Length: 279
Image 1: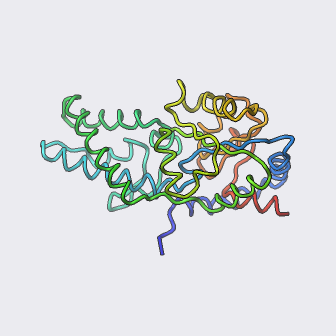
Image 2: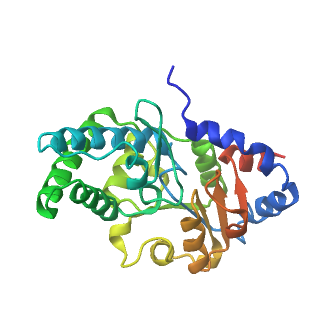
Image 3: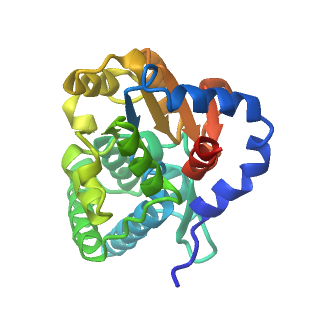
């Protein structure tokens, strides 16, 4: 049996604090499942639909393994102390990624930004910018191929049930992610979930990604639904800021990476919304 990731454990650990807001969640529930109020739900992908640590922990570990090897060939290195600061990651004693900072580059940045940060650290390690850029490009390409083979995409608890319930209610669905559109579609295909979504909106389709509202506005335009009839669900404050910037009807945070002040409500799992609806 696959080991339960810290992403899932972290969601469970915050359940007690979320129980402190039952009246607020009742209000959110009543608005979310009222078709006159909400006609579409737009969801972030990583950390919202799929287990961030299992997907991007796998990828990060592979990228850094390859980068370390290539740097060692040139008598350069990135210190272990610096690794958490590259993308905002948390590692175990063996150096494997086990968690992430929801405010950090890996969680909120575009892929181009993620690449640029690693190139910068290669430069700091003593490489020229051009050589560092070439090495990072090669390592990421190889890590992507390894991930294609492993397909480490796993939905978080309650996701599929939530999507099914939205479909039953006639609520239309879309994805708004800082990842590229093609990658997002591929990851959803790996989980067998791509057919749920009428719109899959990646950072490459807009001029300004999160926390700006461009992706929500474009997704709403493609769906033919006004932002004030749309709920946004995500696992970072950037997702909540995006929802606010687009004047969405609801901004719902999931997990411990969202401040209550930035969201209309914070849930620990999609099953919480389903339990409220069933009640």
